[in-house]
Image (cartoon, rainbow over all chains, first blue to last red):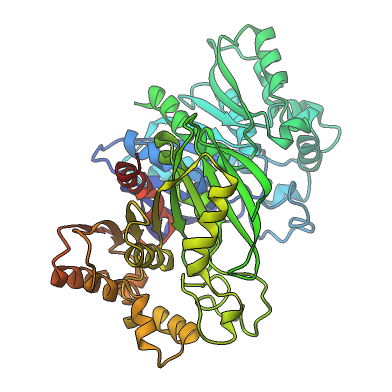
Amino acid sequence: MSFTTNATIASFGGKLLKLSHKAKSTNCDMNLNLYMPPTSNKKIPVLFYLSGLTCTGDNCSEKGFFQHMASKKGIAVVYPDTSPRGLNIEGEDDAYDFGSGAGFYVDATKEPWTKGYNMYSYITDELPKALFESFDNLDSQKVSITGHSMGGHGALTLFLKNPGKYKSCSAFAPIANPINAPWGQKAFKGYFGEDQQQKWKEHDATELVKNWKGKDLDLLIDVGTGDNFYKQKQLLPENFMDAAKEAGVEKNIKLRMQPDYDHSYYFMSSFADEHVEYHSKFLL
Amino acid sequence: MSFTTNATIASFGGKLLKLSHKAKSTNCDMNLNLYMPPTSNKKIPVLFYLSGLTCTGDNCSEKGFFQHMASKKGIAVVYPDTSPRGLNIEGEDDAYDFGSGAGFYVDATKEPWTKGYNMYSYITDELPKALFESFDNLDSQKVSITGHSMGGHGALTLFLKNPGKYKSCSAFAPIANPINAPWGQKAFKGYFGEDQQQKWKEHDATELVKNWKGKDLDLLIDVGTGDNFYKQKQLLPENFMDAAKEAGVEKNIKLRMQPDYDHSYYFMSSFADEHVEYHSKFLL
C-alpha cells in the first residue's frame, strides 16, 4: 500500500509529489500527483481532481493552476491517473476515448476489461485508503471532489453515489448524461455491455440525480459556450439540470455557462481559483 | 506585416490569440501568442515574455500562469517563438540547445545561420512594429520584458542593450553570463564564430552590466536553488550580481534564490503573479 516518491517539485510554496504505487483494484502500478500545500496544520483537507480523456495526473498539475488557490487555502490536491496502464488487453491503446486514458471511473463488468478497469473502486476506496495510511497529515474526514469532462462525470457520479463521502463536488464541462452521449455510450457498452442498461444508469449523473434522497444538492458546474464537445452534445449539462429540477433539488446547483470558453485547460485554469474557493467553504 | 489569427481562446476573462505572420528578419512564417486582457482601455501596456530552449510560445501560455495577473492588471502579454522554423539549414533540428528552438535572441553573423537566425532584430524591432501596427489598442510606449532561461538571457540583454526601450525587465533562471556557460558558448560559437569575442560580450548580460551608464538598474530575478541547470553553472546569476556591484548599480536589483524550486514551469507559475505585479508598477 505504500507509495514511491518519484519526484518532489516545489510549487506555489508547497510540494508536488509525483507518486506511484501498486494497486490491487487496477491490477497494475498507478501514477498520481499529490500537491501538499505549505501549511503547518496537522490535518489537511483533500480535494480529488479527476482528469478527462487521454490525460494523466500531469496535465492538470501543469496546466490547471489548482495549486494557486490550494496553496492559499491549505488544501491538498490529488491528481490520479485516468485508467490502468499496460494491462496488455488487446485494443487497450487503440482509441483515445476507450481503454487506456479513458477508464470512465467505473468498475468494468465485461471481459476483458474486468482485468483491471476498476477506476471506481480505485478512486473511491483503494487510493484514498492508501493515501490516508501513508500521509497521516491528510484529513480523511474532509474530502471533496472535482474533475473535468470524463472526470467531471466521475466527480458528479462518485459524489451522487456516495452521500456523505465527499463534503462538496464541482465539475468543469462534465459528461453529465453519458447514456445519451456518444462518449458515454461507447464507454458503457465496452465496460458493461450493450444490454446492461441498469448498470449504465448507475453511472449517469442525470439518472442519479433523479433519485437523490439527500438535502438540496450544492454543486458548482462550469461549461464553456465555445466548447466544441458541448456543441456536439457530449456533455448535456441541461439534461442534468432538468432532472435536478424535476427532482426538486436544483436550488443550490450553480450551472454557469461561461461565454466563449472552450474545453481546454485555458478554460479550467481561468476558474480553478473559484472552484477551490468553493470547496474551501465545505472543507475548512 | 499583418497577422493571421489561427485561434482565439478565452483565458482569464480575456483572449489568447494564436497568431502567425511572415517575418522578414527570420525569413519564415513565425507563430506567436498574444494575450489580450479584459479591459476597455484604449492603450494597453505590453509585456514580452521570451521563452527558453526547446519552447514555442505555447509552453508558457499554457503553463506559465502569466495571464492570471495580466488579466487583473490589464496588461497584454506577447509570447513569441524562440527561433525561425523550417529554414532547411543543415543540422538545424539536430540539437535541443542550438538551431531551431534555440535562437538565443541574437542576430547570427556566421553562415549558414545568417539565413534567418535574427531573433534579436525580430524581437526588438520587426515583431513589435508589426504588433503595434495591427493592434492599435496596444501601447507602444509602455513595453516591458521578461523571460525564462535562454529567454531570461534574452530579456536581460535586450533590456541592457536598449536603454529606454523597455520600462522594466525581470527574469526567471536566466543564463546570466553565457560566455562562461556551456549553453552560451555553444550558441555564440555557432551563431558568431569562436573568434568573435567582442560579439559574444555584446550579448552577455554580465558583460553588459559592467558598462551600464544609466541610473540604478531595477531588476527582479528569480532562480530556484533546486534548479539543476543552476547547479551545473549554466545560469551563473552570481556573476551578474558581482558585475553589477562592481559597476555600483546593484542597489535595486532583486536576485531572489527561491528555495527548492527547479527550472520548470512549476517554478515560473509560482512567481508569475509577482513578476507581472512588478512590471505593472512601471507600466501602469
